[in-house]
Length: 242
Image (cartoon, rainbow, N blue to C red; front, side, top):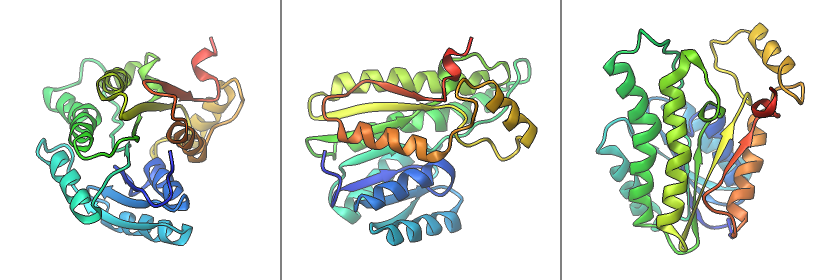
C-alpha cells in the first residue's frame, strides 16, 4: 500500500501509543485525522508533532462510548478530507476490575469503548474506504493470557482478535484487516517503577518495549498487501515465557 498522500484516522491519538502511531503515519506523509475524546490539548500536540514530521493533520472529537459517535466520526473525517485509506483503532481503556467487584456499569464501560466502538467505527469506515485500504486494530497481550484482575479487559481484547478475523473475511479482497497485540511497551501511568522492573525481568528479551515497536508492526501490516486476518504479538516473548 502507498501511504503518502492518503488519509488515515487514528482513534485515541491524543496520547500514549495512539499518538506514536499517528505521528508515524504523518512521517509517511499521510493526512492524519487525530481522534480524541477528552484530551483536546494532547490532541493538538499530536497534530503539531505530525506537522513537524512532514504530514498534515486535524483533530476530531468524539466519545466513542456513545453508540452514535462512530458513524458521526467517520462522516466528519470523510467530509473534511474526502476519502479514507487507513483506519487504526487504538482508543481503549485498561481498568483494573477484580472478579467479584465488577458491576454491570463497569462491564459496559469497558466493552463499549474497547470492543463495540472499534467494530462500529470499522463498519462505518468500510463503507467509505477505497479499494486497497486497510484497518489495523490494537488488541493486547491480555487477549492471550489470563490476568485475574483484568478479566473484562482481557475479554474485550480477545474480542478484538476475533473481530479482526471476521472483518478480514467479510471485507476481502478490497480491504485488509489486521491487529497488533502489544505487551509491555508502555506501562499504565499508575504502575510503579518496581512493577516495570519485574515485567522486564520476566520477559524473555529482558527488557520492556516502547511505542516504536508497535509502530513498526503497524507499518509492516499496512505495507504488506498479502497479509490479512492476522494478529502480530509484540511482547518481547512474554507469551511464550512459560
